[in-house]
Amino acid sequence: MNTINSISEFHRLVSLPEPLHPLVSVIRVADIRFNNTEIWEQFSLNFYCISLKKDVSGKVKYGQQYYDFDKGLMTFIAPKQIQTLAVPHDQILGPESGTGYALLLHPDFLYRHPLAATIKNYGFFSYAVNEALHLSEREEKNIIEIIEKIDTEYQFIDKHTQDIILSQIDLLLNYSNRFYERQFITRKAINHDLLTKMDQLLNEFFEQEQTQKNGIPSVDLLAKKLNLSSYYLSDMLRSLTGQSAQQHIQDKLIEKAKEYLSLTNLSVAEIAYRLGFEYPQSFNKLFKKKLNLSPLEFRQTFN
Image: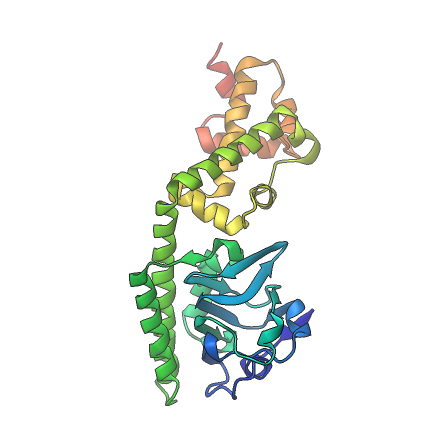
């Protein structure tokens, strides 16, 4: 795998002049020319990349899935994420077709700024490429205005440059968070279907006693079966139910535990092991946290 360590190195690899600032850069998609296709077969960046692209003929691949940038959308790539880019042969010599921007941001640019900590709270940096942010024309205009302000600001570097640029990036991320929440709402019907499929998967785990054999299903496992990233699954569920994917799994475990406690003579320890808990004490602790009753106290309410 090829690791691209600096923004300057990235500029050279896409046939662009040296960046005006070594730690932040705005690239116009139409100016990109790939000069080495082998590098892009599997690579990672040691800096953040926030892209707004449309009508791009190059395809990005995460895992086994390619994604075409045929419409305006945003993607958010954190440092060290593995990517693959399928570059058409005619783009080795000519410009990449399409329009849009790529904002490159090195973590060192965030040094001693509050954004250094808060940027890690934005889950969309861990979304898969097929979970990109689709923008309305108005939203796209807002994002482009911010990116162009950043582009203008680092043309003249002084002691205020870093704070002004980072305040604009902070604004961009907050807008992106808002627009993702809007996207969750506008895709509510699709997301409800995903929630139903997730519940079906959990029910299958319980009915086939897979939890006893393989332990409690993880968020990563369920997300993989639903062809989603774990972060997107959690954020999507939080928009629908107010709970994360982990909390949803725990609620389903408690529902099944209540069924065992009320309808069977299984001991609490047997129920704990059947549900995938390694230690009965962990099951007891979770049950009491959720219901304010121990499993035995809950069972006694049926006597």
